[in-house]
Amino acid sequence: MSGKLLRSVGLCKTYGKVKALDNIYLTLEPGHIYGLIGRNGAGKTTLLAALTAQLPPDEGRVTYGSEPVWENEKALADLCFSRELSGKLGSSSNGLRVRDHLRAGRMFYPHWDEEYARRLVQQFGLDDKKRISALSKGMMSAVTIVLALASRAPVTMMDEPVAGLDIVAREDFYRLLLEDYAATGRTFVISTHILEEAAPVFEKVLILKEGRLIEDCDTDALLARFCAVSGRDDAVAAACEGYEVLHTETLGRQTMCTVRASVETMAARGLDVDCTALSLQKVFVALCGHEREGL
Image 1 (cartoon, helix red, strand yellow):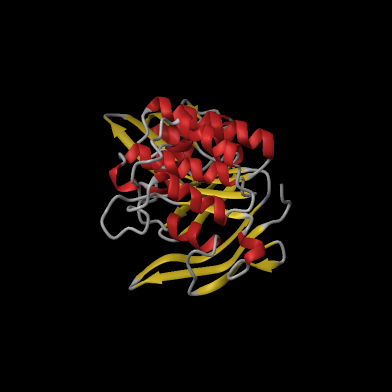
Image 2 (cartoon, rainbow, N blue to C red):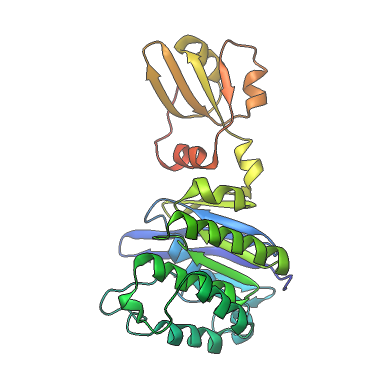
C-alpha cells in the first residue's frame, strides 16, 4: 500500500453563515485506522468530502504525497470516500440497483477487488438486484461497506458505515475491517457516532467541534490526558484546583468532575478522592457535549 501522506492545509468551507470547516490542518499518516468523531453538524462529512476532492474548499488545499488531489486522476485513484446512501427522491444513487452501484465502483477504483466484493455481498445478505431506494437503512450501510472495502483504495474513508446495522452486522463489519487492515495496511478513516463499539478499533482519533479540529492524536495518548475525579465536594475542589474542569456533576455533598489531567497526576496529589480513567465516549462528551466550566 501507498506510503504517501494525505494533508490538508488551512481548509475552510462555509455554507451561508455556518463555517463547516474552520482552518483545518491535518496530516493522515499511512497504515492507521483513524476515528473521526463529532456531533451532528460538526463538519465530518464535509471534511471527508474535501479530503477526497468530492467538494471544493473555499480556502486551503489538500495534497496526497506532493501532489494536489483536486482534478488529479493519479491521486484520486488511491482515495475512496464511501458516504451514506439515501433512498430519498432526487438522490443520485437511489434509482440504481445494488449491482450497478458496485459496477460503478469497479470502474472508478483501479484497485477494485471483484472477488472480495462478491464475498462481502454474500456476507451481508445483500440482494444485488434490488434498487437502493428499496433497501432498508441497514442494507444501504452494507452497500457502502462493500464499496469501501472492495475498493482496496490505499486511503479509504467511511461515513457512518454502521448506521442502521444490527449488532451482529456491526460486529461483522469491525471484524472485516481489522482483517483487511491486517492484510493490506490500508489507511482507514471511520466516522461514527457509536463510539463504545468502535473505540477499540481506532488507533488515532480526530475530534471536530463546530468545524474546528480540536484533537488529533493517538487514542491512548488522548485518553491518558483526562480522568474523572469524585468524592466530597471540598476534596474534589481541592484536587481539581489549577486544572481545566470540563464537566461537573453534584449529588448532595458528592461531586464528580471530568478534568484535563491524567489519573496519575491527580492521584499524586494525595487527596481523599477517587481518580478513574475515562472511555473515549466520555472524553468526547466532555469535550463536545458540555460547555467548559470553572471550579
